[in-house]
Length: 315
Length: 288
Image 1 (tube, one colour):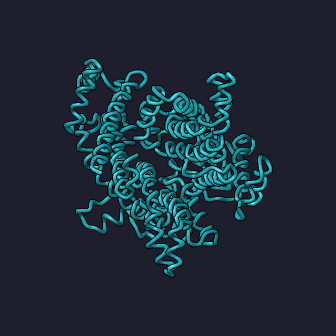
Image 2 (cartoon, chains in turn green, cyan):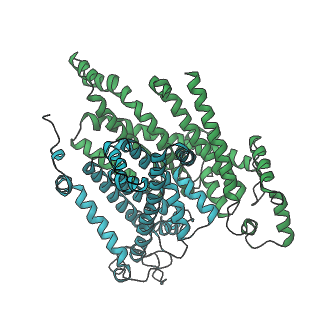
Image 3 (cartoon, each protein chain N blue to C red):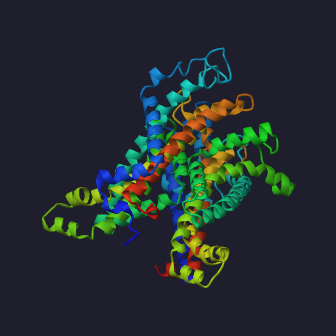
C-alpha cells in the first residue's frame, strides 16, 4: 500500500511540475507584445523598460524560466503589476481560504442532497419519486451556476432578505456570519455537482442491488433499510468516489464563476480580475493554485480508492 | 433469457423509432432544440426590434409592447435573447465539431499505433487532465484575448482530451477484433483500417459524448461571456445579457430570469437528447 501511495504522490508531483512549466510558457505565447498589453498603451518608454526589467523579460527565456521556477518552489510567484503591487503569494494566500470554504460547504450541501436522492431513486426505481429526482438532476446539470446564483439573490437576498447578497466574512469573525455568507453561493456551486453524484449513486446502487450477496442478505430476512444502508450503500459508494474526483472540476469551475457573482474575493475572482487587468503574474499564480487543488483532490481520491479497493493498487 | 430487452432485436431506424416512441422526453427535447435553431436562423425576421437599439423605454416590465421587458438602456430583451441564440448555438456546435475531429484523430492514432505515438499523445492528455476544462478555456482566453474566434478555439481545446480518451479506448478494444484482422490480411492501409473500419464502430459513444459536450460548450460560452471574457461587449449573447442585467435585478427581475431560462432550456433539451441517444445507441454511461 505504501508503495502505491508513494507512486501516486510522485505521479501527482510530476504532473504539477509539468503544469507549472505549461503555465509559464503559455504566457510567452501572448500574441503581439505582452508588455504593451500589460501597460494597456498608457506606458512611456521608461515605464516599459522598468516593466521589462521587473518581469525579467530582458533575460533569455530559459533563464527566465529557471528564475521563475526556482522562485515558485520557494513560494515566490512575483508581484502583482496592478494596484499596490502586492506579492502574488500573499494575494493567493488571502483568497485561498475563501475558495476552500466555498468548495467545502458546496461539497457538504451537494452530498446532503445527492446521497438520499440517489438511494431513494435506486430503491424505488422507475417510480414517481425516481422520475422526479432524475428530472431535478437534469435540471441541476443544465442550469448555469451563475444564473442559479442570480435567482437565489433575487429570492433570498433581495426579496426575503434572509441572507446576505454579496461578500464574505472570515470564520474568525464568527461561525454564523461566515456560514450565512456562504449558503447561497454554495447552493449555486453545489447543485450541478450533486446532480452528477446522485445519478452516479443511483446507477451504482442498481448494480449492487443485483448482486448475489444482496439476494443472500435479503433471504436472511434483513429489513429493507439494513439491506440498503448497511449492505448496498458502502459497496455502491466505491465507484462514486472516483467520480467525485472528476466532478470536483465542476465544483472548482463553479466556484470561479460564482465568486464573481457574490463578490467573494477568492481564487476565481482574483483570476478573473487578473485577466481583466492583464495582471499576468497573478493570473499565472491563480491558475497554478487552482490546478494544484484539482490535482491534489484527485491524488486523495486515488489513495482513498486504493485503501478501499485493494485490487486497484496492483493495476 | 426471458427478461431480454425488446430493443435488442431491433436494428437501425426501427430501433430509434421504438425507443423514441417510448421515451417521451426525446420528441420534446428535439422540438425545443428545433425552435432555438429556427430562431437563430431567422433572428433578423423573428426579433421584433433591433437588439442594440436603445430607447427611452428603460427597464419596463414585460408587456404587450415588449414581451420580455426592456433593459437599463431601453433595449428589447426578447430581441436580444433571440439574437443571442445565434452565438450560443454556433459556439456550441462549432467547438464540438473542432474538438471531435482533432480529438478523434489524436485518440485513434494513439490507440492504433501504440508505442511512442501513444505515449506522447497520452502524456499531453494527462497533462490537460490536470486542469478543469473551464479553467483551460479561461486561461486560453487570458493568453489569446477575447473575441468569437478565440472563444471557439479556447473551448474546443478544453474538450479535446475527452474525445481523444473515448476514441482511444474504443480503438484499443476494436483493433483486436477479427474484422480488423481481416481488413489487414486483405491489404488495407493503416489509414483505411483506422478511419473506414474501426471508426464507424466507435461512432456510438462519440455521438453521445459530442451531444453532451454541446451542452457543456454552450454553458462554457455563457460563463465566459458572463465574466466579460466572451465574444464582444457589443454582440448580445446570453451570458453577456445576464452580466449586463445583474446590477438591476432588484428592480427588474426579468433581466435576471429570462436570459438564464433560455440557456437552461436549450442545455436541458440537449442533455435529454443525449440521454435518449445513450439508451438508443446502447452506450454504457461509465465509458464517458
